[in-house]
Amino acid sequence: MTRFATLAAVLLTGAFASLLVMLQTPPQARISRFDEGQFDDETRASVVFYFCFKSTLTTTLDLLARGEIRLEDARTRVYESALRYNPGYLKHIETSERGATARERVARNLIGHLRSVDESDPALQTRIFALEIEFAALHGKVQSACGSFTMPGALTCQNW
Image: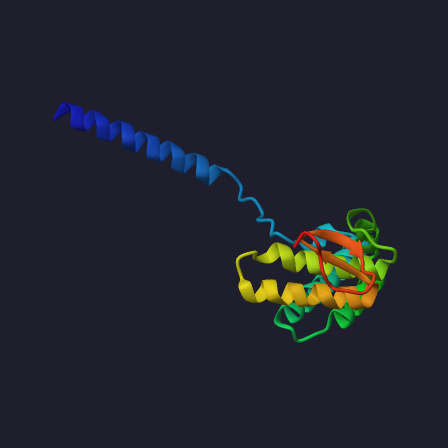
């Protein structure tokens, strides 16, 4: 019985001490993931512009994957949105994508985004193949698993 009383006294003392510490500590303000008050106007504008661009990119990729938009139209939408809202995207793909023009690099980047989504979906793989053919028609090149090469006339890949 003495052990129980000692254990209970220790637990109650610990609980009481914790309660006293909690009551004496002033409450701290919670910081949300995106607290607009902590940014200046330029930073807020940059965040809004990025979300505008990201929304366009995401919507365009969804439409492209479902076949509701052609690659040429998707490329134009993303390119125009990047010019207006996120020029850094165009500078980034300058180094990460091959291509003679910014529009070609945007098209390659869109196909690359779709390729990275889900490699096990046969419908998406078929759509990506169709987009590669459309890319070849737009830019005279084939981009596929076997590499990228200039197309003299036929849509074939030796290593396919």
